Amino acid sequence: MKNILIFLLLFLCISCGSTKLITKPKEIIDCPIVYYSSEDRTFLESDEQIITLDNLSFKAEINNYAFSKPCFKQNNLANFPLDILIVAEPINLKSPNITLPIYVALFDVNEKLVDVQYFTLVGSMQVSNDDNKFIETELTKLLSIVQLDQNIIFSLVIGFMLDEKRKEIFN
Image 1 (cartoon, helix red, strand yellow):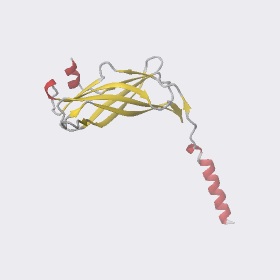
Image 2: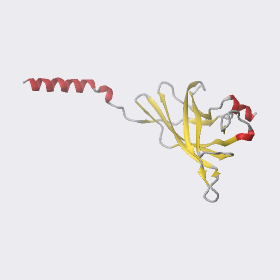
Image 3: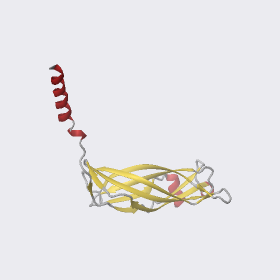
Image 4: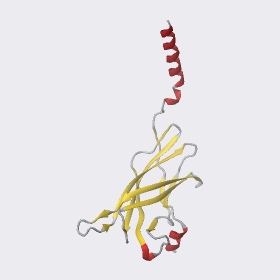
C-alpha cells in the first residue's frame, strides 16, 4: 500500500511540476536587415603596444553575411543564426592565430537601439604551400544572436570593436 501511495505522489509531482520543461515549437520569423558599420568594418592588429602603420600584423575586413538557417522564435526568444565572412590579410604576422572582436547592434522598426551583443571570433591564417608564408584568408563564423522577444528586431549593424588607437590609424 505504501508503494502505491509513493508512486501516486511521485507521479503527481512529476506531472504537475514539469510544465516549465515543455518547449514550445519553433515559429519561423523574418530575418532582420543587416548593415555593416562604415566606421568599424575594418580591423587592424599589431603585436606592439603602440599601433602604427609600420608595425601592423594583419588587417581584417567584414566582407559578407548570410543567414545560415531560418530565423525563428521559441520560448519568447528570437534567434538569428548569422554567418559572417571576414577576409584577413597578413601584413607582418608572426603567429597564425588571430582573434577578432565583433559587435552586433540590434535595432527596432523605429531605429531605436534595443541591444548590443559582443562576440570574439578566433581563427587561423592559412599558409602558402609554396613558400610557407601567410596568405589572405577567408574566415566564416556563425554568430548566434539571441534576443528576448519583447521587441521586433528590424535591423542589425555589424562591426569590429575598435579602441581609440585603432581608430586614430584610420584618420
